[in-house]
Image: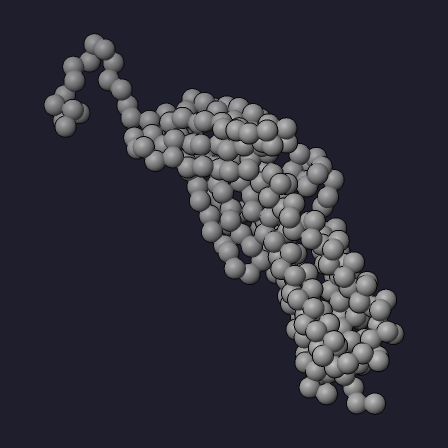
Length: 195
Length: 76
């Protein structure tokens, strides 16, 4: 049943402005292994007639090979589905990283836009620059803690998007409420305010 | 004969795993849907359902190969 929501825990007034998955380089090994597995299965069925006269030891060896192929088929598809379900969402309130797989993982990490002090885009190495992916390092305000979002595709776009959304958030009514109120220059500062 | 039953059991387990996986996957996707675009699709055009179809095909093909293999271990 559709809930008209984009992720579990989405707030009523929360809107997903942009989402992305990790770069395809993360899923490439799983994609490359699949054709090999298919070829192995085809090879097994093609040589089936020749297997009848072979000794039991050879047949048992093939049986183990077949079970290994079957295991890897399921394993690689689990990895592909994990890649497709793992998303990063930029909403009007926060950045949410969904770490979800079909069976084993259901985690979520979110960073409020009001907590973001600085964002760094890191693209080091030939591969990252040619294939256009990188890391976004989000430095949280008031701490030295930073959160890394790795394998971000088109990091320039995501970098600008997060900055734009953050500026929009800070200038919105909600953002102003989240910010500490500054006393005007001519207003005397109360002791309670300092404490 | 033991190998024959082992292979049949593995086929049933493999097909069941495939069915449960797809069921869980679509349960989640239907609940939390996205508007995919050329920027979010894998390589700009590969949709999740293409992988699902390939997964079903490969699992079924694997099961057929398994049944053929199982007949090797039947007493003649």
